[in-house]
Length: 74
Image (cartoon, rainbow, N blue to C red; front, side):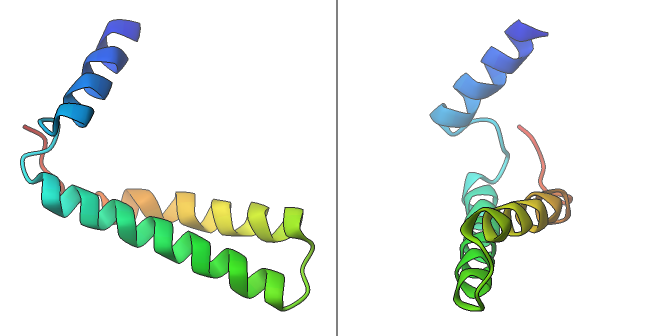
């Protein structure tokens, strides 16, 4: 299992894990931006920083499977 994870990490950083690396990076960027915007908005509305970070990360993490559902692996 550890070898599989290492192999996936190496392929990811070489840009060979996904069949369409540009699309994968765009989906990843969308998730990061949504999470960051949620964090800033929640913090501006007066939520404690730890609570804003918790909520934003939960929503951002839950969004990733939806974003990555149609990605093809090489």
